[in-house]
Length: 105
Image 1 (cartoon, helix red, strand yellow):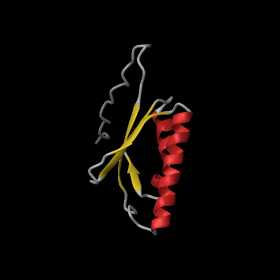
Image 2 (spheres, rainbow, N blue to C red; image 1 turned 45 degrees about the vertical axis):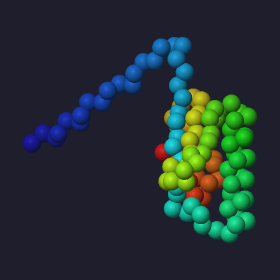
Image 3 (cartoon, rainbow, N blue to C red; image 1 turned 90 degrees about the horizontal axis):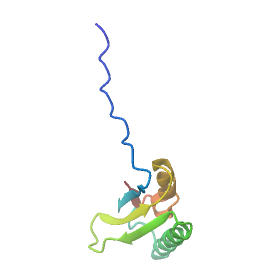
């Protein structure tokens, strides 16, 4: 029998030339959330905030903020950058994401 045909994939939509693309990231509680000493947690949070300031100063991070209900959704990032790959690299630079205290989606 002939191999099954791959389902057709829709082409990426063509955006008007004056449209800006933003990348939204939802930060959720990671498997290592809350682990560590008080000092380690404070140092991780300080490094997270320093990274946020750096990305904002570079003009890449437009919005960053927490959800205050202490649920599994921890916060958001909104990036203005060239591609999804760049947005993923910017998220990966976050110390709390690197430590899996936060998971980025």
